[in-house]
Image (cartoon, rainbow, N blue to C red):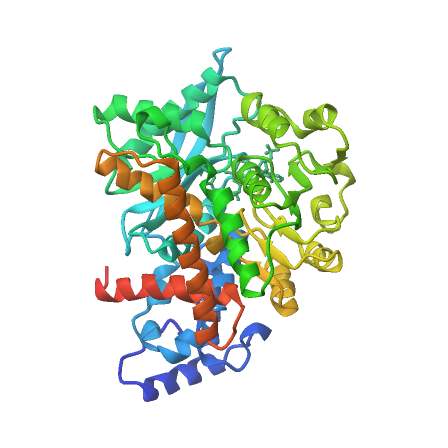
Amino acid sequence: MFWLRVSQRGRPEYNRLIVQTAALSCASDFEGNLSMDYVRQVLERLHRSSPAQPEYYQAAGEILRNLQPLLEKQPAYLHEAIIERIVEPERQILFRVCWTDDHGRIHVNKGYRIQFNSALGPYKGGLRFHPSVTSNVIKFLGFEQIFKNALTGLPIGGAKGGSDFDPKGKSDTEVMRFCQAFMTELFRHIGPTVDVPAGDIGVGAREIGYLYGQYKRLTHRYEGVLTGKGLAWGGSLARKEATGYGVVYFAQHMLREKRQDIVGKTCLVSGSGNVATYTIEKLYQLGAKPITCSDSSGTIHQPNGIDLAVLKQVKEVERGRLSEYAKRTKGATYVPAADYPQDGHAVWRFKADAAFPGATQNEVTVADARALLANGVTCVAEGSNMASTNDAIDVFIDSGICYGPGKAANAGGVAVSQLEMAQNSSMTAWTFEEVDARLHAIMEGIYRQCSETSKEFGNPGNFVMGANIAGFRKVADAMRQQGVY
Ligand code: NDP
């Protein structure tokens, strides 16, 4: 039996831990290292107790394998079973969502809300509507969210939710009926000081509006229970832009540390939704040139620069596809997904200086990472969550380029969501400039924590380690102070 509870008496108990772990074969990552043996055990147990959740194991492994230097310095985190506690969600809500389409046919989808950790504040995290959503996907996103939210320095816990419903190809009235059905169950689990969902893939202003309307109808309350709301009814200026802008601010700071500038950089961006669009907008504002974007059907390559006005018209107004964008702009080449390289994505195979993943998880493979380096990229800042596989991350870290992992670089969205909560609870509305200035300061704060923590633990410039240790330490300390619950 390894599932130990090490007492606080120190080394003798620690030695027992060595004996207990010695019998176990070590994964090469953790070989010969006590705290990493322990982490490996936690991960093995996760495989057994939560089967078939590969993205969740990946997210947990990526964070935990970076904690080694902290655990060696602070064995109290082991003694108090913080790691075993942090990898288990506080609450998982799974529910049925039944709705009727425009032809009167009844459909059934799955709904999820995983309230992962409330040590630092009310649960906070987006809702994703996409056919690929499973409890595994929501769990990995919720786990990442805990540490991302901690890095913002704001009082918010971590959660995520969503459904396998696909809004693509549905009419507005079908999306409305789905959102109403989804909220008919969700409303009893959320509240402005309990759990405040926001958008994510497939959940934008339209969906938040329908969800909010139904919450109001069911509760008879007008309160800040969702973020990303319309500006006329409690939304915050700059929320729509926040994630994309924040990613670019983060990249700017990483580049400055290496005495480089974003000005004049040729940039690869993936995705063409909320995060990608406002990454592209901010890159232009700061004098860089974004030359790609993508959707799940294909990639646009436009060496003279993406036409932002046409992109917004096609994607935001018409809810169209990038194949349509290609027909309307000059100098754009469209690469259909069927023509992508076997080992990765076309969007990462062009010559550039910087890369901004903004679509979905694992969209940068190890072959993509090598191609980016070979093509001259010296800065990668992730807008999407868990954009890179763990092998790809290793390539970036080993190369010494500027690499900003999603949980640090894309935290601007949730940060401005929390600013929306603050405005709602004080019944005020700040100007765009005020929110943007706060976003800027928060992104600088996150960058500093990553940088300083990476130095403190002997790996200067390793922002994966910096972000994971800084985020974990805040949550873990709060959990210790609040006792076992
Ligand atoms: P949107 O739904 O607005 O856009 C998603 C974009 O990614 C679309 O272009 C979509 O293409 C593409 N995409 C989605 N899934 C896939 C896939 N499996 N393969 C290829 N392309 C895909 O979502 P967001 O822009 O809001 O989110 C993008 C990423 O950023 C996600 O990882 C999200 O978790 C993360 N994020 C978002 C935040 C926010 O504030 N919105 C905050 C922090 C992180 P298609 O239309 O063809 O599906």
